Length: 70
Image (cartoon, rainbow, N blue to C red):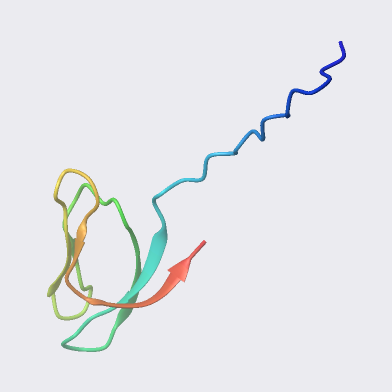
C-alpha cells in the first residue's frame, strides 16, 4: 500500500512513571531501596523512622533521595 504525500506517524513507546529509589534515612544514614508508588508505609530497619508514606498514587518520600534506579 503506497502512502504518497501522507506523513508517517511515529509510534511512541510508553515508559513507566514509577521508579525504584535509593533513599537515605535522615536520622541514622541507613540506605534502602524503595518503590516510588509504594502502597505500604516503609520504615528504616535500624531506627524505625518512617521513610515513605503512601498517598494513593505516588508515595511521599520522607527520607533523602540519593539515586533513581532504573
